Image (cartoon, rainbow, N blue to C red):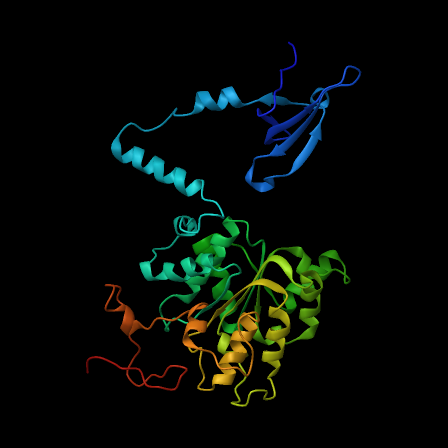
Length: 354
């Protein structure tokens, strides 16, 4: 069987990927050389020069694709509608900010209001977002949707979640069960296990691309030095998720009060990530300078510590809804805390009934 005849503009399958032939160099005394560009999502735009005669398997796929077009398509209205929707979801690109993928690839029932942070995040050139919804509105789910969407769009390939120590296991379970993401909890046992398996000089942060660490260890330089070594300044396609972010805000009202150890740790680490996602139900502790310092850690291009933040400025990067506001827009039965119980703001919760 003779070798296939190649032309500029053809699509070929070689090396387990699809390529577009952009140029053909022919010579009387040498084999043809194809200049090809990859069409697959995991290597879009990459160029290669190949010798067709030297390839193990190379085939033109244009005719095959045309024959497959329209085959196995449901003919009933309901099935055809589902088929069209699946095509839309599977062909979403990073350029289409209005076509979400994460909600359809998560094992959860989503309320419409939980899509607002996702829409806002995709409109930002870098996802520096503060989710400050009220207690019980699902900030973890909203953060998971943003993270999953960015992973699907190839805008994130490495992430670290920092939360209070009591919440690390819950984060691990929710990321796994609801979003199909496996993250390692970084603690003394994890470091000991990695070094026992791969040597004491091994950097445990190199063992994966998804980690969860407690606030207390975030302040420990012994754990952070390895992370900072692989991040650089900053690492592309990386995301830092800070749960209970108000713990990182300076508590003093002065513009440049003495920072806490947590404040210094978050300020130094957050600038090494391309994307940042802060979660808190109490974003403002009553001190404007403290709030500005928190926003500066989130987005240093927009905010500066010591300079008052206007509502228009923080609305651009913050999502804040209260249960009382959402009860007017949705039938979702938000939980009501028992009488006498207090939120972290120190204000009593309004209770209903006796």
